[in-house]
Image 1 (tube, each protein chain N blue to C red):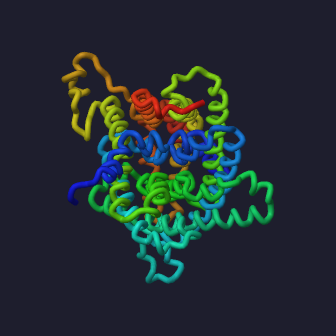
Image 2: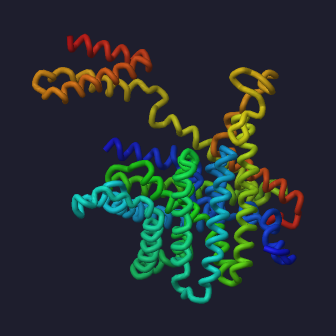
Image 3: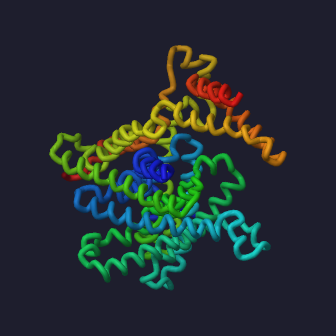
Length: 268
Length: 215
């Protein structure tokens, strides 16, 4: 559960699609002149990302990655079809967008009208393909996490385009130098917003790494206890792991050292 | 290739300034910003896009009379995806470190709006030779901006160009560093790419007032 919450907030604020990795910039710049259109496009992006990232995860897991084809039979286990990722991902995305468009048109004509031309445009939005590619390169582990990642990346993108649209509506009444008017000032403002979003970087580590390390240290040190009952290699592994953790921890904060020593005292 | 006619030279030179894909047409921004922290990555990205755009333009142009209009987006996507897979595999084989730096952005060339934009605007309506030149021209315009941004970001951010230390050695305090100069590490962070492009747009539109947007 914690993993999901962490991924959710990380994808919205820290790895924001627009401010950290600049995905979807073209439509971001083109559509952000009014808040209403920005909201429409943002909603469409959230929807498409939430649908295509899990789908592409399934493709990656059972077809594309190294050894993925093992379910077909043991002789297929060495195949690595990851070079086909691009073409398969973009094919799924184009298909899903087309399908979503048909479904939305049938079941909710008002939503279809408000989304307008944005839905087909999204198929070639770098944010969508980027979401799937980052899902692949960051090795997302489960389908639930993939859905989480897609949804939260979309929400992050939505947040970004909403903010810039609101700002652009306001600065129309400001005294921007003529050569900077429109595109130029948008770039600079987006740059400043990106700098602002960097301040979220400390959000999940809390700036003070002691709590996470303490849990790891306690877990690692607690392992040697049931050594007598374990088979030889497992015991050796547990010992190696705990000593590795211990050396890492001594390089970190003093608080972690103190907790390790305290746990040691309890063991001995 | 022979002597290029005036119209053909315009195809190559226009996108370098007056019809620049990034600053005027507002296409291809995504990859222009994310990988420009090093000049080498910018150059490689520009060359990759030039290959994909030129070859893709030629292929689409050759097929323009037989692609049914309803599925043309899909055909374009397939052509681009195939070319990008080729580029990606070549990069992984011959320049592995660089392909790690470029990571997913090589794949994102597929959705690079310049490529689809030029297919729609040019390749579907013109012959292969002109389409090839148009591809080269637009990719050159794109590469021009990428190289400028990469140049400033790498020079001011890490004091190197293409990996070679040009301002002196920061650790041994030679060259400019002896005078107390410090690298501006901020330039290596992504927001600065946006601001540098904003400044380039400022310069470009000041020199050519016809490009200024009306409010």
